[in-house]
Image (cartoon, rainbow, N blue to C red; front, top):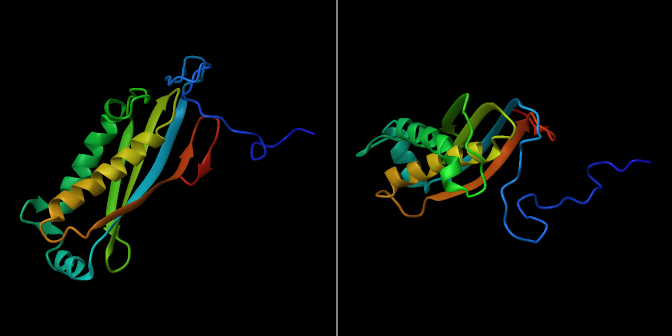
Length: 166
């Protein structure tokens, strides 16, 4: 009986046979449409959330949501410059959505698409977290008790292992 993927032992992919760090060689993989979605949350102290809601998410530095979307999108396109073993990828699409998730938490979701030999999970995570960092930067004058996270991949499609919803 063939073992399922869940029972197989998984191994790190960025380690060469000598145990040294290495970029994965994707040259033998098929070029396919790939997408990933990730989120990061930003939790504010209640008085800060109230103030931000009253201002329509505007700060002295400008529109918080619009600035975070731009920063997150720029980060998606430069992920390979930030994460050592990420491949530079042509980004076919990037959408960042930001909305309240309860009284004191903003939920940032980043969806990324490419047609390539490797996936875009890192790009989606980078977009969501850099957008969250931008929200923090724009709001830190109100409080340093703002909490970022968790950040997580919600789903991915294309390639060998799909999971979640994209």
